[in-house]
Image (tube, rainbow, N blue to C red; front, side, top):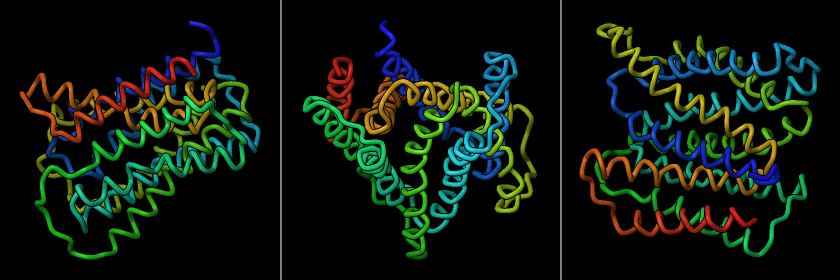
Length: 286
């Protein structure tokens, strides 16, 4: 694969890994904040691999460190705020609002990074958002809203995750290697562990080591996907990668659910699958 297409390879790896992660991430009884702690710790092995790749010569210049830490804090901080939103409203209301966060990335990248794509690329971005909306549509109406404050929390996550992808591109533009960016991302995730524990509503009683181990191996898939996403942003355009990665991972999740649980995809999901696959094919030519 030619170098100019390396971004697509890394983006596809991210899509597949996040799709597998998403299919198994809900199969735990651990409190959400404890899952965050496990996820943050799962970033550490990947960060060690990153450091080995650059022979522990990570970029410590202030600007590079600030941007890279910003990437991690926006992502990890958004995850913690998401827990607050889910305390007040069901996922079927919260997730659709958050799932289109790449629109923020697209707008910021076009405005400040002057990123441009061909007309075919624009079609690919549109198809990515079609897939996002199709997979975000609720398939049930269970749940209740206890307070409209969830809109505020969900809006914070929406902005944080949209800005994160933009800042990730900036960080890659200001560091000599993608590995340094990821190391700071891992560091910022670990830094927020005490806050996650303070937010927790459970004492952790009844949590078993096998359950923690299982969650760790599931969450490390998320960490690996984040690692390859950094590489994708280094070689590609943020306004393309953000919607592409977020739109296609649900396709993998849907396929896995179909195989393991004999789950039949809904009509919107079928439309989303076609849109996502078309999106990948278009960007393979971009």
